Length: 252
Image 1 (tube, rainbow, N blue to C red):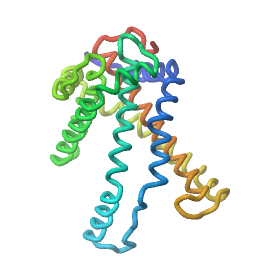
Image 2: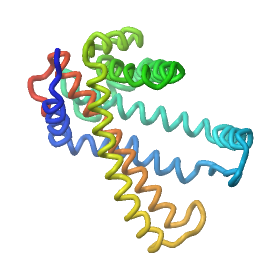
Image 3: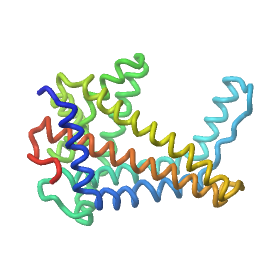
Image 4: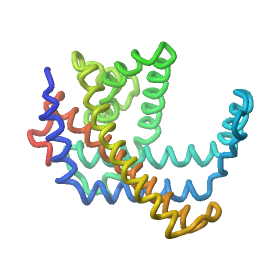
């Protein structure tokens, strides 16, 4: 099926408008608050300083991830659960409220998490083979999570295979659309963060990790992280509905 990028974007916008309250509530609980809390309690990255060697930089990053791996894993699990809940809300035939969606999603979390890890490994393999294969693979593997939930393809291999089947002939087109949308979002983030970040630093002052200024800056970063999260889910759901012949209206 040849996909119209205009129709795809219209579907994404319709999903965001029609489900705004649910999307914001789930993103707030599973992305914004955990991300904000995590940024405040994580062991800070200690830069080896200007002119550091490659070995020194590697040692600094290794130390940072060693100190924070458990926190990062917990945040990843919470984020994945939030993503799964939204897929259930938007793609399950029963259109459950958030509470029921949580009850449906929780038992599926281990296999959904495994699917997401496998997707990351496939993309990482693409990058190892140079960047271009990874970009194409992204466009083909984009619907693994949506297929997992909508069709209950709880075997990770089946979910990924279904995504490849649905996106046949649209791999590069899918990547280009997502790339353009997120580049626009990134430009907006940089403009807002550059202006508002400067204002927050001036108003709240400096200080350490737990200062008001750092808290406000972390909240701003978490807000954008939540926005990217919602945009990614809406893009995937809209594309799945188009290619799988799902709901006639993206807004429902």
